[in-house]
Amino acid sequence: MDIHPKEQNIDKVFSGTNYYIDFYQREYKWDKEQIDTLLDDIFYKFNQEYQKELNVSQSSIGNNYSWYYLNTYVTNVAEGKTYVVDGQQRLTSISLVLIALYHLAKERELSEERLGWLKSKLHGESAEGRGFWIGHGKRKKVMQSLFDNDEVNEEEEGISVTEKNIIKNYKIIYNQLAKKLEKKHKLETFIFYFLLRVVIIQLDVSRTDVPMVFEVINDRGIRLKSYEILKGKLLGQIDKSEVGEYSKIWENNIASLEKLEKKYSSREIVDTFFRNYFKAKFSRSRPEARKLDGTYHRAIFDKEFNKSLGLKNNATRVKSFISNEFSYFIKLYEKIEKCRGELVGGYEYIYFNSLNEMDTQSMIILSVCKLNDPEEDEKIKIISRLVDKLFVLLQLNQSFDSNRFVKIIFELMKEFDGKEANEYENVFEEKIVSEINKARNINMKSPFIPRIFNTVGYPDFNKRFLRYLFTRVEYFLTQNTKRKMTDDFWNLTSGRGNSNSYHIEHILGRNDENLKMFNMDEELFETQRNRMGAILLLKGRDNQSSGNEVYKQKLQSYAGTFMWNESLTEEFYKSKLDIKDFIEKQKFDFHPVEKFDQAAIDNRSKLLFELVKTIWK
Image 1 (cartoon, one colour):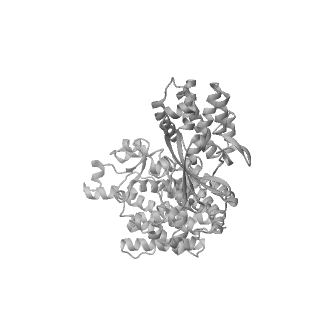
Image 2 (image 1 turned 90 degrees about the vertical axis):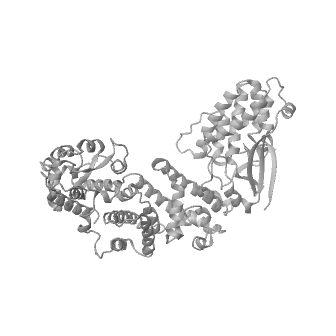
């Protein structure tokens, strides 16, 4: 490996070299934190040595100010152009400092010689005409606007991440310099200090070493993400004359996902996409998939994965991958993520699964969809519905284990290879029944087992699942009776806080009247009051206020809450044709319950079982 280090001050860095941003590099993403650190570091040293009475000249600055080491940047020369492999965040920020100093020098009426010197550090003449030393491509327009002191707006429609951050950071830099360098003498001294005494090391590496160097070097304060390193490894294989086209495809798709990350999620959507995609397409067991959990950008180039992927040292395959698989599957994933973040008609189950953190649905959908799949929509809907069904029925049958669930997903992915969408239902059904039989050591042919449903209840499930179950029952009832949900799904299933969140309510409060119905048998009373037919969902304050009241008093607090709760009351059935039509059509045994005794618990449990069976049939 050939490395050629070159120590130089800022004056020499920007004195005739046009710096092109290599396609390995991310967008310009420094924010206020990194800008503050850069300026604080430089001014800490400068302020210690600043002398008000000292004449400003090259020799006086050289003799009275010690040098300050700023850091390193890495370049690679290809086809006569100098590309920045690492350090573009820093070099871009230094350019913004120089533009700010230029404008301050004009405002404070420094000499034409000083202004000309600063101007020469920003742009110069080259074979391509006049341009900024580090202002090519998407930077050119915004850098010119800042230099011309034009009004610029970082919120302008269609502006890139790089342009937005350049504008935002320039404003921060200008304001800080204007404050720190109020006096003309201090400004002029700082210009000399910044250009002559701030030192930065340039490392020039050969093209073959660029991917390795790019991977191990991080910009100050911001670690490279796996997908950013992957971008470098892939685009670095493509010839410079062609790489722009594929870089644009990459950046446009990544930008779409990053927008969703800001809108819907705190997790890193882009890296999650790549992990899910590579697992979906190139692993069929959990141990295989675990190799892609961490540094997948390394793992996919290992022999076992590269055998299928073929992305190592293969520019033709890389170009095909970016144009085809990457472009198609990232758009597919974007669709899944949008539906994961909000309830979208026709794709409700994607949202339902996200409420239960069943994110393996994304991996299995990516797995079954082929490139440009004509059955894409159908597969998304079927898979997301069946993942929800698998989760809920395993839970209700006391057969759910989170680790085992992930293994089941990989087993299903393997079984789906070569199958059509209309075959998925049977595969899922067989898997659900098999898992229940295995977990409970029984031999049933259906996942809907009344005997099991009647023996489980409040203590057997986590509260989030019970809230989800009753929310889905409510959704089913409102959809079929043309009524609206009283709150959104997230609040109903996952909301926090005693007053605004929802809780599981025991219909049978702990009081003597209720205990007498069970002959004061504490054990029997607890067993029966915890059954599925004897609990419901209530908002925090309603739940707290009903507490241990007798049943007749509780009925009053159920009015105006949820349909499942209101169905206990007589008022629910009066003059409501949609509800009557629904009950008659579905033949559900809905009726008001005057006394909540053993018979009522049995009937309500049976009714709830029939609803569950219909919803998750």
